[in-house]
Image 1 (cartoon, rainbow, N blue to C red):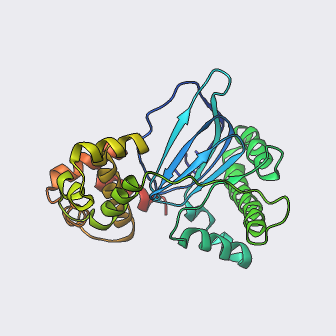
Image 2: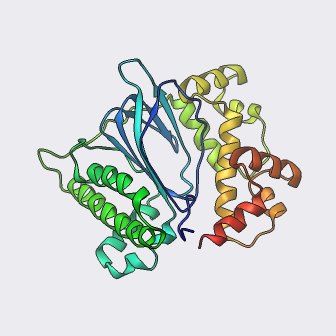
Image 3: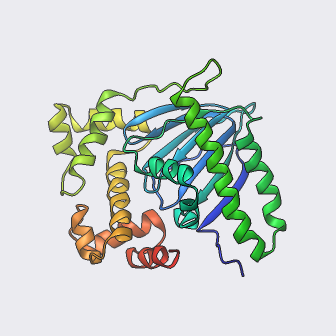
Amino acid sequence: MPIINAEQFNLVCRRISTTANREVFHAHSQMEITYIHDGYGQLITEGQAFSLEPGTLMIFRPFQLHHIQIQVTKEHPFIRSVLMYEQHLLNPHSRQFAVLHHFIMDLLEQTSPLQPIRLPAASPLVHMIEQFANILPTLLPHEAEEDIRLFLLGLLTQLRYLWKDRQYPSSNTLSTASPVLHPHAEAVMQWIEEHYNEAFRLEDIAGTLHLSTYHLSHIFKKATGTTIIAYAQATRIRHACVLLTSTTHSIPEIGQRVGMSSPSYFCKVFHNATGTTPHQYRLNVQGRR
């Protein structure tokens, strides 16, 4: 049986969507690296929006709330490769490489969203992803454990080179445009981030922005593809996951700290969002460390 399981490391190459999905705002404990081979859409994360197109590389830190709206046509299905891994797989291995370890810690500690990168399909990083996806099913369990860690170290090294190019721009540096969300939608996200630990009503947000609840709800749904209530719940669950992972607070106390004073309601919302209970989530994360 493999020591590294699918929750710790998961790589899917060229996943195809031929119909527009209804992805909700979500966050997870894994680091995620996603490359778009074909298709268009919009990424919304932490109050910012970015255009997505073929050749876009996205990076999501653990517990970073994000939502992807895809546009699917017959000519352009949405095709992407997705890598998700638990950061602990690289500890303490990355510490043996001081420059790479510093780069990884810098990625994890940034407070603003990591902007998508424009990257050609012929890039060594994209080639590494596709090559390892082909090799992985043929590896024996004892081989996979070592090769997965080596693959991650190599991939992050390639990513560090890309980040260095962005810090020292040249004529061939790749960049991506960042369109702005509707200002009221941004304001709602910011308000929720500041008040998620309180019990509040939609009227409280609308009153702050001097808008009717109907008008504000319409603006937010059109800009983000989801409701304000769903976004607020996703924000609370994201913060709950962080607390379950990094503290020893009881389940009821964590529910209280994220604005849900009823333990049963907190557990219900958490289960609907993650597919597991807060207690089991904590045990799962602890077991992967």
